[in-house]
Length: 194
Ligand code: GTP
Ligand code: MG
Image (cartoon, rainbow, N blue to C red; front, top):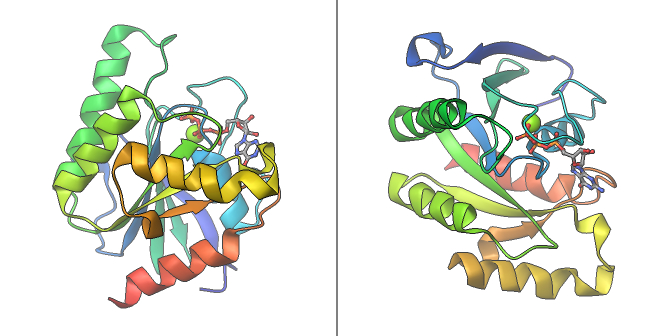
């Protein structure tokens, strides 16, 4: 991947709107405002390809980003955004669950949780859902720039324990400093080979 050719391709709510080719998909899941869209921009070195906002609930649909015609980054709407009407929350949850359950092209699911906070009930529900899909997954402890460097490792460990996942599957991440992007590209590239 040389990242010379990255584009927003389509927003989808229904299966019929997903891309029809079978390119591997790298999926961003997590609570609203955790930094999923910022992750995409940081990894692709673009300022505002994916729309971000300090107000939660920015991403309301499933957004597919075409990376060099080789893979997609799939930006999911966040959960746990209480300002959204109940009806809309249900609609979004259904779209996300339908995608995660049925989409064969999913190559890797990346669940983001905020490094500063104990995972919520919604996070635990989501990781359990992800485990059940039998897809490959990792967890990113986002906004790692917000805590002291010396504390990052122990916070990452606590998150692994709370979510009951292997410590090796949890990585720190910062869209702000972009410090860990190379490591996550390694994980993504490796997932494409196996
Ligand atoms: P939804 O679209 O609502 O699901 O949110 P999202 O998960 O896409 O979050 P988004 O990327 O829009 O980021 C939310 C806010 O957190 C924005 O103000 C970002 O600038 C900020 N943010 C995201 N990642 C980081 C990070 O690594 N460090 C810091 N300091 N701020 C971050
Ligand atoms: Mg977003």
